[in-house]
Image (tube, rainbow, N blue to C red; front, side):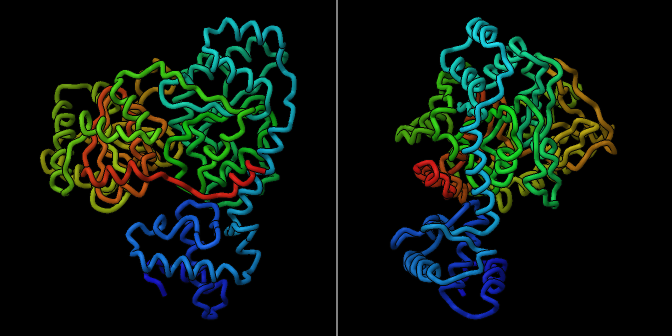
Length: 521
């Protein structure tokens, strides 16, 4: 069998084929499984072409091998398979779970678009408060769409005023309410949810992660029919991070007004689909905020816009302002240490709160999770380097990986752990709050966070960002550069080879689904 397919894919194919050997069918099933693993909702076959292509799934594939796999997948797709495992509609092929999620998304997205929301506002008060709210025309449009529709989307990059618009929206809703409103702010991570909440002055608003909101527990199935959210207004930030499964639950459960906020040009969800971007084609419910009101570095803003718009000048802007050219491991590690060492040295003359502030202002990022120059390797390497230099008094950045609701420590939150006192410090929950202190034994699961993956950095902003672009980063497409660049407020530095960065700029991060066919109907 083709060495590109791993043992799990082969096992999947053999189970469905009941251990019968049929080469093309086996190739088709392995390919569909691999496509699903890499976040594609479905496999699309058009005449002599397949999407995702073999080169999209396996970037290093040779031309002849690509042709052979494509031919085998097309031939294999013409056979019959157990509909409980493989679902076909027209020229699209799904694993059953992905078909269920996509069908649920289409059904309830359509239902929310058609559904007229309950009239819970005084129209005159709502209009008066909106006009006096000091909002731009595009922001006023967004507020009106939330009032008029059961579902609405606000799109925009950093600095375009999404959070400000939401803050004003909640104030307007509270002012014009006919009855006490139930409002909840949520996001895929607790960090993102509370980041938005701290910008809202109104009290009495619930804030929680999506999994908590939907009462989904890891490893346990929950029927869609058991999900119902009794809120008048549900506001979900960082919606680009929501995968197909989670979006299916969100749309099914929403009974009041649902507002999704996000930047569709950022990296798609780690798991299946690029659902938020796929839902942005309906202009009736979508408002795009285009006016950048907060960018401390115009150079970073221009670079991010050039990357997003596939501007051929993006590489020139990068070469002039941001790049540190190099490709070998020793070059990267030397650069990393130059960034990290001063932060450790400064600790001797700083309080924990001051060091926490410094820590939160700078971040190393890598697109890769594993392998040489992946996040795991870098964090281990830096930790060993620091411990070798001094084992007395270390300040170690940590990232919470499991929610602890009682302590209000949520997945994605970054803090600092002091080895001498065995205590950790995290930023306050509310704006203006002092840092929060926890003993080692109070902490939920965490990992060291000298370096974060670009995916996990979404929803955060830092004064300075140092982005590693080792070979292999190009598979994520230009969205990896855009997402990383828009995390930086004042300074951005990118370390990598020109070849890797050029390849990254030329590639888009595409996840195939049937949602585009749904929109064109």
